[in-house]
Amino acid sequence: MIYKNIFIAVILTIFISCSNTNEKESKKQTWEHKVLVEEIIHTSSYTYLLVSEDNDPYWIAVPQMEAQVNDVLYYNAGLEMVDFKSKELDRSFDKLLLVQVISDGESEVGNERTNVMHTQQTHIHSDTCVSHENAKDMGVITLTELFTYSSKYGGNKITISGNVVKVNPNIMGKNWIHIQDGINDYDLTITTLANVNVDEKATFEGVITLDKDIGSGYKFSVIMEDGVLK
Image (cartoon, rainbow, N blue to C red; front, side, top):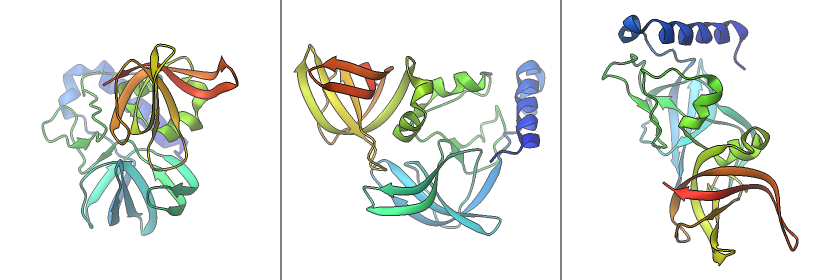
């Protein structure tokens, strides 16, 4: 949980950095969590890390990255999952934190030493100030994020990636594909003109539609329509 005083401090930091461009070079990225890596498990799409923070061990999952035991890493926030089951690992975690952006150093904004690992090919420029709501438009979200908070993504364009598990070509003039991420049972259907193969890893951008009924008993609680292969 992010405490109120930390939240206020972060908002003030963003406001000051956006309004005072002359001092931008001297601002430092603020990280809320500093952790020590104790164990590493790699899967096809994600890296699972057993980390300790103030001698409290817990698991986090990040998009694929290189890491070593005893590395010190930094991050700001994550999506907490309880009784989380990884299909690829065939393993359950009592608690798992899904972290989108993680760093190996307390990087300086605007400095070449910045080493934030946007491991899903997401890059946020230090000279661009965005609101909290617009920030998600700049990155690749996870299937867990999409399905857990589907109501806020309905009608919006997002970018998402996963492993292609099924392809139904040339139905109603489009290819209907299914992607999963190997972390849980979430399965996203995407309609697209792109051609992909089963077992490929693919990234799509498209509009999310909720409670889609195409008739003949076919209904989708969440679907991406007119996906464009990135």
